[in-house]
Amino acid sequence: MVRKWVSWLVIGLVVLILSACGSSSTTKEANTTTKTSEKRSDYPTKPIVFVAPSGAGGGWDLTARAITKVLSETNLVKQTMTVENKPGGGGAVFMAEYATQDTKNDYKLFVNSPPIIINNLKAEGNSPFGYKDTTPLAQLTKDFGAIVVKADSKFQSLAQLLDEIKKDPKSITIAGGSAPGSMDHLVAILPIYKSGIDPKDVKYVSYDGGGEAIAALLGGNADVIATDASSVGEYVKAGKVKVLAVSSSERLSGDLKDVPTMKELGIDAEFTIWRGVFGPKEMSADAKKFWEETFQKLVESDQWKQELEKQGWQSDYKNAEEFTKFLQEQETLISDMLKSLGMHK
Image 1 (cartoon, rainbow, N blue to C red):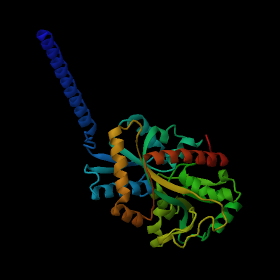
Image 2 (cartoon, rainbow, N blue to C red):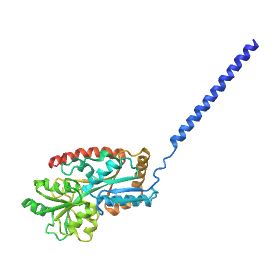
Image 3 (cartoon, helix red, strand yellow):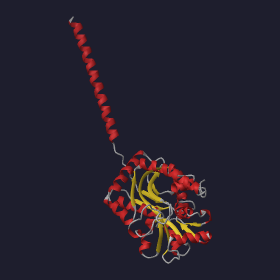
Image 4 (cartoon, rainbow, N blue to C red):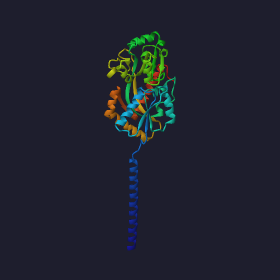
């Protein structure tokens, strides 16, 4: 009886020991998993490039430089950041390179706006690549279009300009910093189209960026340009140009406070120029998370708010998820607009 009792005691002890070992092993594995999940990414570990797919001086260029400046000043990004200009086709040339050669390059981001959608949908100069070939990271600002002439132009109002175009559409050269059918072109022809003039009859000349378009205007190579409202303030202040109208729903502030909106002038035309940052289509989860968190902190910083005021931009922040949804909605709207103008592919 005693021998049987001892046998059961030994068996019980063995079971208890094995159970304790199993529990210890499970706890150890759980702790290891927790530590692994809590391990922080070390991204970024090398210099970062922000691309402005245009020449210097335009909206993309100014936005990219403002972003890198504030990210550096606030120490939100400790790595070196540079801005590269990649002009050509209103951003289409850069997109062809980026969407095929930099699909996994976490260290190259770029700034864009409606042309990333427009270029992919329009008929002429169509780009096979669009926002779906990227990872949208954040929308940061919104701007508006402006119809601009030289200060000493014979056209001192939008009505005068439209009257002349009605008489002889080919006699007026309109320029912009993006390709035909793209953003500046749409801003230019919207009031023309809404006034009952066939936009296909109007001469439009494209340049690589708003800076080149303004140079063409000041050099006498264009009668009027369509560009970003925020990029002309310094020229207005210097007395070099006159803004005939802006595409906002309400009057802007600052240097353009006295400029009427197209709607004020009886033209049912409005166009918002948003600007955002994009990464490669196959961006790593660590890099995407870093930039989502970083852009959230950027827009909350006092330095960024000061930069917005300095540049005349309006804050319009959307995180990656919100931005992607917005782009889907924009694609539908722009598609309808291009179809109405006979410019859809």
